Image 1 (cartoon, rainbow, N blue to C red):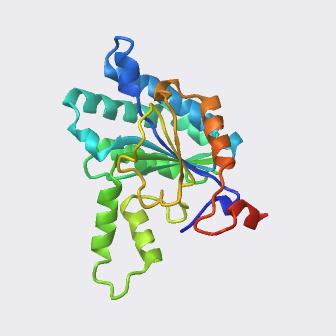
Image 2 (image 1 turned 45 degrees about the vertical axis):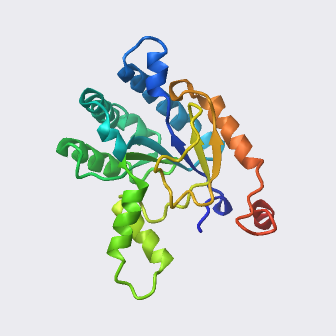
Length: 242
């Protein structure tokens, strides 16, 4: 188990749920909700560093999302491509390091090229590490890592973790999740960061993702910081670190 809190960092993950419901509730096409959700991404990224968040992992597109109607999938891929292009300059200027985790073999080749370019251009960013999970499935990643290491005489958790990060296109130094937020009132993990969420604090809010803003993020972080995290010990980790 690897926690970022003991190092003065905070790794927060968000399952950004409720875009479609936000749109249909207003009589709009579902894609309009996803576009509004992109604005919530910007607000969250801007607010994160001031709240002590150094790593932000957002669940943008799951492996199961390929099963949605083709027009919606195409629209989501278009939005993702727009994000990579439109936000590029500001991400670089604000020192945000970008990582895209998940599979890449099923993405459009030119999107993969944009991903690799943005990751390279933002590699020196220190203000925030922004990780977007695209075509992501924790079960798939765990299975791939386990298959690779299946011939080991004795399982090595650290080696397995390294392999898991590798198949996800993630930096090996990224610590486990500290806080997992899910919007829209749903209360499940949905195949997101299952290994990394082993000791994560869970926070659920009824707010739909397009309405999520800086005060909502601050509220979630405040709740997290008031929780007693012992990791199986008798003494809270914050007391041991002081």
